[in-house]
Image (cartoon, rainbow, N blue to C red):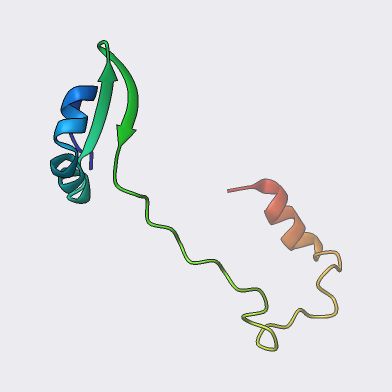
Length: 83
């Protein structure tokens, strides 16, 4: 979903900063311009995904001893043929 961007000049940004932050909190992006040129953008923070913990499946997943063994010819032919 594309959110409309509002453009303001530096004076307006300083004067109405609290109102602009309230708009950002609702998902709006604000472009701040100086002398008609965009110089900054205010926007909502991106949601951060939680870090994955290593070892989470330790003891639950096993890899067979022949994991690296060559595939049977019919399976190898199917892989080489592609989708």
